[in-house]
Length: 292
Image 1 (cartoon, one colour):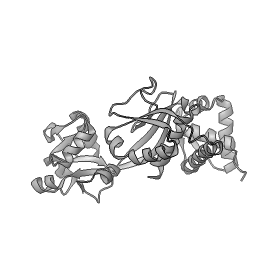
Image 2: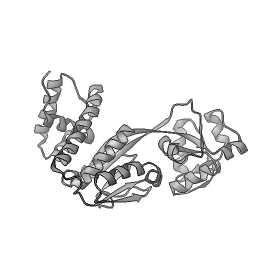
Image 3: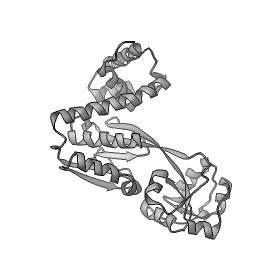
Image 4: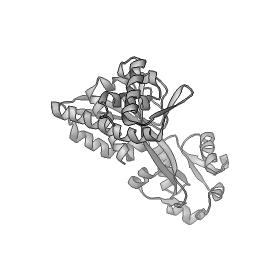
């Protein structure tokens, strides 16, 4: 097996992250035939198939998924090495706006923000805690952390985590209403609404939890307020496990059940490749979520 070329690995990573050769070529400022040759050369050097074509899109093979993890580590290491070698980390300054849900902003992000303050003390971070999707194209934020992959070709998206969640309730609620023994029992319980009722019912249905508007007597468009209502015993709510680790005050229901899983996408504009401050923050966030 030949030693892989770093340019070929970059071509592979861009293709995997964008999902198409044309988008990856635009990202790297290459022609599509050139990028396609680089990916093919990497497959030839490694002796494995990295992609399979599904219609007009590309899907990673099992070997591709394995290489993706190692390739990201190489990319992040190269970026960190470049910054450290040039002594630029301490000198990076300016503002970077990160948008995430209010719950994630309050309970998940603080540890990585502490790392950012240590790595780049002259950098200003503005956390836009919002549950709606802020428009990166209009620069309402520089980096977005979301559970849906954007489809605009001008944006770069990286899947950094498959997070887990469970149903939770406060001890006071369980003492008053009893502990449900099966998912079917949840139809007889109160829920706190984190969004509009129709969306919530649609979300729970595929999980085997069949609810009606009668189950939702209280809620909020603020995730923080809704989660506090769960913690205060108003009803049951699903929540990411890493949020519960930081906030506490609730008990996990059905710990033997497989967790609810959902993706965490890190998204930014193509300026990632020209702005050192955005690159630093993006890479540090990617590392933080990947190793969690």
